[in-house]
Length: 265
Ligand code: BTN
Image 1: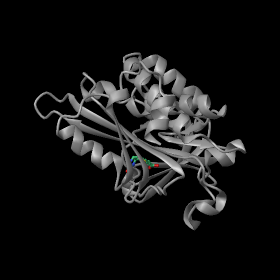
Image 2: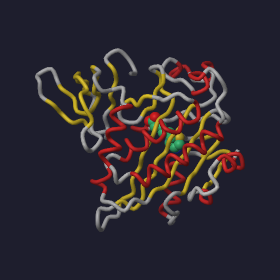
Image 3: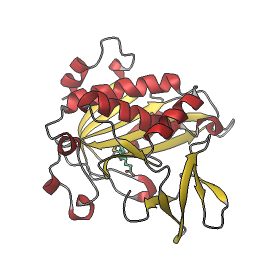
Image 4: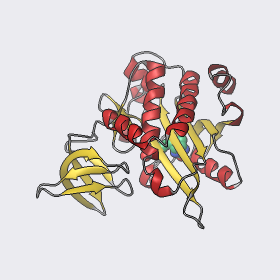
């Protein structure tokens, strides 16, 4: 798989020599954080065939069987304060939609903040973790991890996610070339890292892909559920929601889960 990815990746891709491939690992994000603390450079890429402890947002696990998905983490070292990079996960989601579209011809939608969905089912999730420089508040490193379901058939998903998960092969109705997808993901991440500075353009592209906008949503935080209508994405990537009493609130990604009124979407 490693050599196939390299042969599909442009020969001038600046991250080519920084790709680390693992047959099995607990979590590429955990390993990437360790490597970042040991000084791994900007643009280090970790890819695994299988994860034994794949992690999702809010302490959830991410099902990561071998031969089925792409589990990838990239280490970035952006030269900006954390406050200027709130749109990082949005940028990653748009970049991964680009990579999926290039590989399969299908463009996923984005369920705020960072699930990629096709046909109302989740096909990928993104977990961004930041390491801050305590002295100046700048970002020392960011690790962006993405897991994409590629080749699963319906029966390959565990019971608890079967009704809400899909794979690219299921959605496309044909097998998907995982090495081509991985190469397109690396290319898209590299482009994204150069374009982060163009925040307004990134957020406009995000709004265009975001299927949550215009929807009635349930917001789950601190064991509490509130209902409202998702109206827009603010300049930090927050979700602007109008509540029944008319007031608007920007919901941050933190410990919040947003769902449609009638299920996952
Ligand atoms: C989510 O859906 O909540 C986010 C899932 C993120 C999964 C990816 S797979 C590669 C990287 N390593 C991990 O342990 N998690 C991310």
